[in-house]
Image (cartoon, rainbow over all chains, first blue to last red; front, side, top):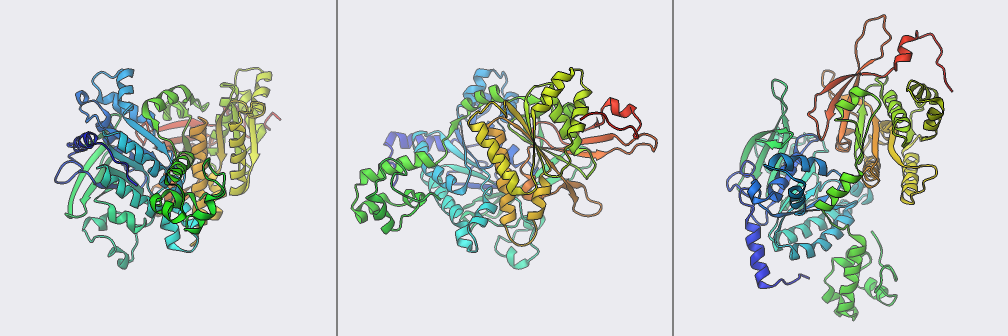
Length: 274
Length: 329
């Protein structure tokens, strides 16, 4: 059941969606900006900068055009109480030339946050958010941090059957795909590296055989429905650096075009810096 | 997975439920994800009524989005930074423990984790006059040591005794007892019963690895699921009631020469927002080994790698020789 918007609203939505140009040229290999319908997965172990990168992208979206931002709205779905508002505000304060409370408030008004406690609640929340996407034409970025948070609990609840274990996430993935397609969103989702890298070569044929994957600690564990809808996969890792400064690297892969780009970044008080 | 039943929400009548069940819709998720036009035809129910029920069910069972500006206002008024009672540790943590977050202290046995927890309990109960909940799963909590720390402060004896009353200790020896204690805490905080818990600000858990370790290992995922359930409960409590949650954990190494990392595996490593490693400092033979080094392994605010020296024995104890019996309760 889809809610039919008026023609003018539709135009506004299309215009609003395409303004994700220049979101982050360093992350996106050739085209430089996420296009409608892109599903970007951030994958990596703990402490590798995934959440910081999300704050960086959110700041880019909600800052006013005068502050170097895109002035678009963001919907953030937090599944493990990870979101740190104070950190985001610090980053915004660093990026605004004159940061007053009023300006910070205006930026934050473009951010919507939801907390989900189970994969069932995530699914039902996605259904009820559909209305919001319809009524907010400038809401073009959807972030799920993280989509793997319910993995162990779902596995335990599903008992012996793999399909029962995965059914909630499968339905979430299918509905996310529908939302992304119908409302022309870009979806960013983080997945945590919680498994050891598999030494079994039969399993590695399941994922794409790209050179970088032997370097990264990647072992796909989420359901197929999710794996297949990802258009860009970014692998985050710590870079061992001589000296004290901590550096991180992100390997950005465009799945269809098999385009791979590697970038380094560091995290300062003002956020991610390439 | 909530099952559909009469009266679950207004509009879901006793007549509708068996008709819906007959066409395969048993749970709320089934109903919400189905095509209501088809269902209306198959069950000969009113389409409008079904749409109304769907709307009410979604409002009841889904999470409601909040606006960033509103949330920020709320956080500004409810977030507090609590001193740990150890000045150098406060500096490491960027002024102290932040409410709304889970902080982890990791270290080998004897590195001072329990002592730091006791110091936090003493500081919060005496200087800040807030209530503290201490979940002890190792038997390491001693009231006499806590009283000793309180006695080292300038406040008078009456205030020190009052502070002791603000520290509630619960001994838990497995994960189910721990979950039950946390559930009781949640219930009393929800009802805002001021009598025994009072304005609670800190929950100390010493240690979380002691109750989780027996569950891990082997092929079953139930242990990991329980661990993640505990993790979720801790984070929810911290966020919803603006508490500072402190947990202690063991350490392991990948290989004999690798760096120390927190125990309980990768899934747990994502849980705390701040992580501090406690290690003993090598001292000369004569002095009792009371010096500890704390390093910041993970923080949402500070660069990692910062290190400070901690003095976990208070000045009174240091001057006494080790053979002197300790005073107190």
